[in-house]
Image (cartoon, rainbow, N blue to C red; front, side, top):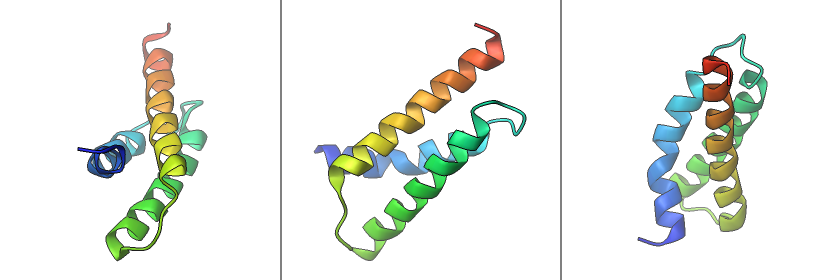
Length: 77
């Protein structure tokens, strides 16, 4: 599985996790922006439109970083 396939495979799960970040979390606003960008990328993928793979990879990485920050915030670390 190549990088684009991996990112494409993980997007739905990442979107679901980002959506679950509490609205009162410091990370919620950032998560919203990343979610929107990932949703647009997912729509392009599904429509077979060209996509900047490096940008998609950065979005996925940023999404995971936000999840990590939200988890640390939740446990108080």
